[in-house]
Length: 481
Image 1 (tube, rainbow, N blue to C red):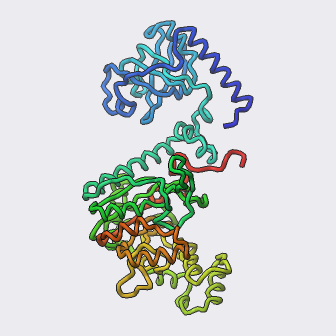
Image 2 (image 1 turned 60 degrees about the horizontal axis):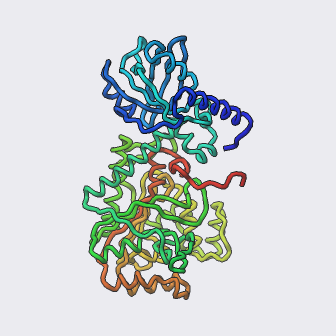
Image 3 (image 1 turned 45 degrees about the vertical axis):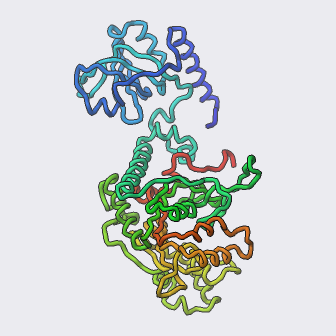
């Protein structure tokens, strides 16, 4: 944050106050302070006359002659503290005047209720636990600049209760997801985040170098191929909830570092994943949000069953015309451009169609929709449909125009998998994951697999429109860039 003259004036005054407190015997950065409980717990178990020890950041102060009312705030709540000169003693009362808003303070005292009915602590002793050398934002009225809220998230959490509430919800959602899967027999595992090959998805990886081995490595774009190795090894119901990294664009629904849940179930398929994800999301919505009706107006989502199922071909025809698949390439390009799409001249018909899907069809889907039967060329890790090998047995779950969860009937044929890898590699054998193919040669059971974008799911369930608002520390441009 910029340190202008006014900011420096504030800091200088706080340094002077700190020096004065040192003279009076107070250590400005304190020590451990055992609490009776957090402030929300003190409020919930309030009992007048009870002795307590509380601690928090001082966020308000009101002086009234020989007494002072202040509020402390911790990560759970705010609570009022009452200081009286003839109770805490003149030296401690005088020293209290040198505290600044934002300082962390520990209080020993007794619970009581003020004449206005506010639950409070009557201070008997106080101690300084942590001096704040810079003031809090906008005198606690809120940090409103969006860029500052993302760049200085710690100030956003202090100043904006709604931000803290949002991240508390995210934490509760992740906890509910883990509990839901554990109750159904899934085990949580960890696979490498630094890999010799970037596989499991089509994306540009971040590249690094492993000095000890003298080899280039990649931050993973997906954990899929390692989780499938575990299916080969006998783990039949596994999941991983961790970070993926993709060296691509930043926008309202993409961050280069993002949280992904990947689930694999041996002897299942895309239909078992369809049931699982609907149960999972409705469970999280009910448990954390208390409702299956999320948002209002154009952003309103109804998670009540049944969820719509539509094929890829059907949704393309809905938005691009019933005759889309009968158009010649030039006519298809012209039709796509009439939908305000920029079509590169080298794109194949499949790429043109998929641009229509991603930029038009997908955006049109508000309530939960399973889009099924994608072209086989787009998804090389899925089984072909038995009735038509040109499409694969998959779905993409779309909510509010966002892809939330792709799922496959996983390809477990090593011969067919090799063909697809080689076609994807474009004749470069170094891009074929031989180690994964070797694992498949040892036999992988039929399985259903699914990825759930946690950041996007939180966006949907909280009504937030930008992914940066649901990530504590999103990637940002360097200051001044």
